[in-house]
Image (cartoon, rainbow, N blue to C red; front, side, top):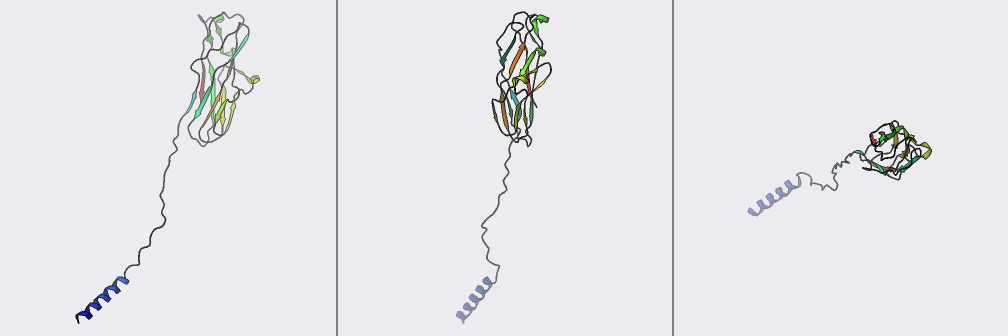
Length: 182
């Protein structure tokens, strides 16, 4: 009898295990949601700290390249447009009397074309051809980027033309040419 009970108990146990929950299935794929951030930077402009523009005689126009100007746009914007502007002070030597000044209205600015660029969009000099040079009597557009997305850089080397009046005295004339970008 003992043996028969054992067999019955063993059969009931096996039957109970077979009637339990369905066996688990293995997960073969699963997803991970990942976030990656593209950092926004700044819009900036770099200009030469100083420039020496040669010289010339009074009454004779004198021109020279100013040095490379570079705009760096790290904003990562959907519309990466920007405009660089240029303005000037009067240039003076000595005591700054009328014959010791070159008024900013007598200084022409010619941006020329780009010397280097990265990124997309349209880059254009404010005065692409020498015939388009403009007086610095007021602020002028120096360079632009229209459209485009993401980061960019653009460089140009503008030319300044000084129309020194015939009555001006000899000397080193000093002034400030300011480039800005927005």
